[in-house]
Image (cartoon, rainbow, N blue to C red; front, side, top):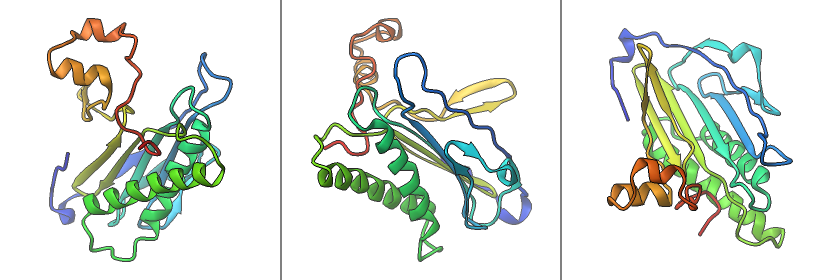
Length: 203
């Protein structure tokens, strides 16, 4: 979704919160998140902790990127895959050599680089091709927002007390729902409800 407004007429401030927990199913935490201020060239998360100076900041001309990645549960190295995903995406966007390239193209390229980084890692380590991660990245700039998504990590907009889902799950059950093969109630208890169709590091 892209909502364009003249950058000269808008000053955008962003307030950030981030928390990650391993949950009740896993012994390790397979989630990672990242915040990148592309204008000031600052990466704002270390060990899943936000840097205080980015908790509330004005979004500069190059924008701020918010990234969430979830290593696929039960897959070998899911926590490594999600860390590689956020780190690679952040570094690729930070090191972009042509700032005039549209953000959609930059995000697509960065996602491709992150995918290749995960594939290269498990290839070099002799691991099976099960190591993978979802990814959702939101680029916020004055007057516009761009979202990139792989898998089923969701992005929502909260406005006037109402949550609106902005992304579409790339999962088996969602595909079946779209084809009219499952109701939303049936999808919640389907045995393949967590099976993703796309993820970084998967063929």
